[in-house]
Image (tube, rainbow, N blue to C red; front, side):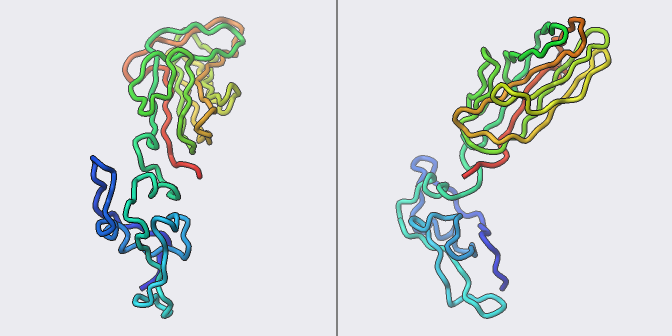
Length: 228
């Protein structure tokens, strides 16, 4: 049997009411995991690695396995060293949009306020300021769309982090066209903010369209992974 580092096989779920598992039930979750020695996937206090001489790899070396050290295991304890998004708060997702036309002055960048939300699982988007302040540190996939109106507005979508430009989208040069900016951004979960902006490179004033359906100015974000 070949060793596989930090491979978990799904076991029984936690009790919804208490968030606890007994030691016996936890064995169902971890019995088939073969981690590396002193694996950082577990905290070595509530769950620990040990060398099991009864099970060897192809070279005859004992396999590292997991066992429960603390019977009062909680979700928080198990997540302490895990590098996965495991709770509802960790699975942050945002889809904010506007169905209102927005004027864009010439030769200027305008921060956009998106007053509607299709999804804001962590309640992290402010529809008054237009700032997305995720409360979980991690890497986020961020997508910003700007939907234009008017004749040949020279408009770009911009994703901003902490007020500075982080990613620029393509230029719209057609009536009712849409520009999109996409980036993967590291957020600290406490003070880092993201917002959507539109740059009008033309000296003439332009506007974003009110849009409808999928053709709306919007900011979308989803947590890809947490950072430890």
